[in-house]
Image 1 (cartoon, rainbow, N blue to C red):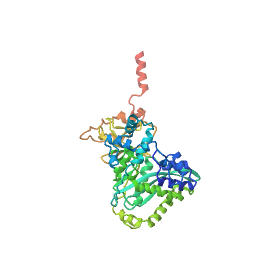
Image 2: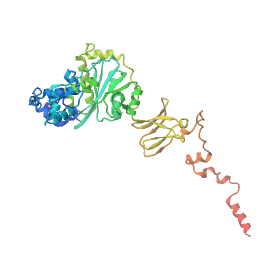
Image 3: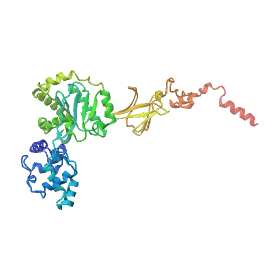
Image 4: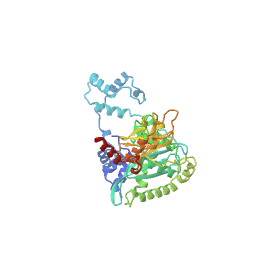
Length: 433
């Protein structure tokens, strides 16, 4: 577990002062509960007495320098980079100088005497309309008389710093996509790139430049026209603007989340009103104007809002079998026979299974029915193509059977029979005499 930062401790102190349980605070900040309780029990500026304790290596500077010089360690020249591992230094001190201390004592000594250099962070400001940063956060609030977790998708336009929050009772793929559309509507358009964390609704595996996007989200992003830029692993600075926005949620929106609400729609309206009020007062550090003015200028450079009407939580590519079927979620669905042996995209929406080919919808079926084979007869009708011959047309009997027409309907009416049954009985009687 990473060491708690000073800002995390300050946020935790504020939340605990608002009667938020420490366990919940630790979960929302993503830190260890016991470490958080320990830090909350100490003042922020209290010195750590461990650094003042005497070390068993006090007076051993010359011998430690001799070991480091043997390996030409750059730390002796003030370079600050270790060339020899601490385990090696500990072993040589034990073998050649009779040192009886522990490995940890050598490690602490080297860290105190040769402190590591500070890693500088590159500050980048993107042009307007280029990037937004999105991330989830969780809060527990009372909705319709029930205390429940509420998930907020917070989005920040990197240039103007305009920030909005969209709330949801769940955090699955459909909510992830719905939240993006809701944030785009509040931005007034779609940025060229959206930077996200490596959560499972967005990234299937990996992180950063080598991340493999979740298929459903990758298709959603392609449909909306934005690129996905996942953060590197354990690099919160990669999306520092959203991280800062999440921290500001604790102060700017905190009172809204501790207020009881009749429903999520009422809470959402209050969050939107608070965002507008904040943007009218706070200034964009890049333009020097209020964030509301910077947002108005940035909207002209955003892409148009997507015309996407249906969201989907699953998308796969399937090859159409010779009988015009594709497999999806343990069932088989028909598509027009012209796509036999070719690959089509199958999307699972809230109610339907929709098949796409060459950017067009070619088939639609109800999703999640009890049937394992779902057919549309018209998919097997039509003329042959250059690549696929049309299925054999249905015969008369097949059409009767598929139309659920009794086979007796094909017989002539009794009064139209030229030789009634009585005539045959008469003939049989004569044959017997």
